[in-house]
Amino acid sequence: MNSHFSARIVGHVSAKPRTFDFGNGMGCDLRILSTRTFYNAVGVKNNVDLYIKTVTFDASLAEFLAENFKENDFVEIEATNVRVEKPWKNAKKEWVSGSAVFTIDKIRKITRQTPEGDQDAIDAAEAELLDGVAVA
Image (cartoon, rainbow, N blue to C red; front, side, top):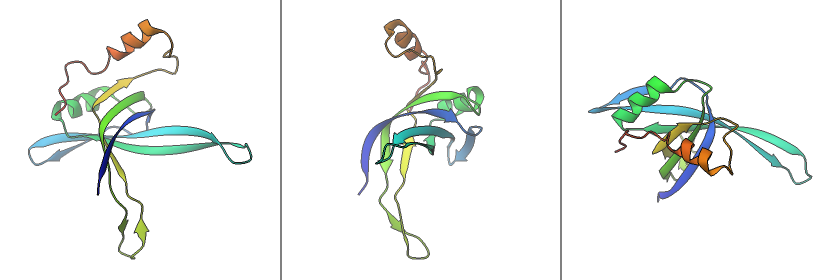
């Protein structure tokens, strides 16, 4: 059984956007590097790099991503239809963890200096969320 939920992904584009053709349209995927910091049970700080694959099957958004985003851009992605696939057995009959597919609804470039508490700056940043790009 698949479950659906939303996600907010923040990180750096780790490779050039990759476009692909499928049947009657074009899509694009981005690989996002998101570094998470946590403390283990004894209080030692750890950083873990997570590589997250995000995808769009919307041709206008795919074209926009390919033209306007590049490796190392710092981005925020809103994904409101995230599908989690159940675990499965590989060719060696070993269980493999299910994956999550993140479908891009909105994306914007951000900076590390984007203030969290300044409402004017937040409103201005929100205005950059791909206005005019229709997502199917």
